[in-house]
Image 1 (cartoon, helix red, strand yellow):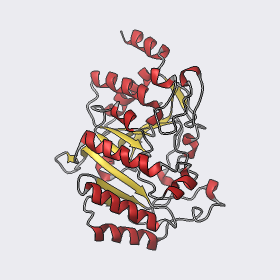
Image 2 (cartoon, helix red, strand yellow):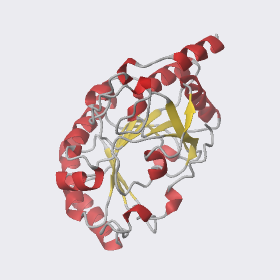
Image 3 (cartoon, rainbow, N blue to C red):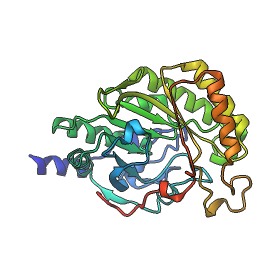
Length: 313
């Protein structure tokens, strides 16, 4: 039966990809026929790494690590992208949906606390089938949807009941910034609607009992502080707190790493200063954010960027 299932999945085309509008770019390309849109991907499923990952928030990484699957391609295209090697489709290996299902189960067998789908938006139809198959075969750990939040709510609704934890970014409030750095003037509008849908689906945070206090369900919104963008960050944090109070967690990150592609784009060509990060953390405390994570010490380093060497693929 497994061989029959594999053959079906290998030959399957995905109706949603024949005129692809999965993300806000709405490229209307036929990815089943090999065309590519903004994400740079056809209908073939590609990924660059599937391994235990220890650099997520403590309630996700725990002691064993998060089972992170890094998909190739991206629909946002930030000029400073920390994972540009795979985001631009330069790294990735084609796999079947059946293989993706097996990867989920293999990560569970390795002790992963969860399955972590990294930049998955453009492969949602295939991921749905892979998750459904894996769950029938014993996948029982939480599933994380790890995204830039540049999503369509219609696509997110396709995932209802399959995702336990949503891990979206909220990058910008100012359309001028999102247009300049991510080529998406409508980023905040789209991301805000997407996060609202995520919260609707999974509700308030739920944690497991025990020393690890692992998250079992909920939403963690990440905000990566960019150099020179303290004012925009304050506006985002106020929006999140006024909208969701303690129904979400907020992760404020200072790990921005200026890579070679921004060497001539100030202020992105420098790290976030300790003073900038301190001002944002103090502001978050001052406005009443209680459920959150901060980073301490020197975290702006390429150690947060894994090797996309096809491990586990």
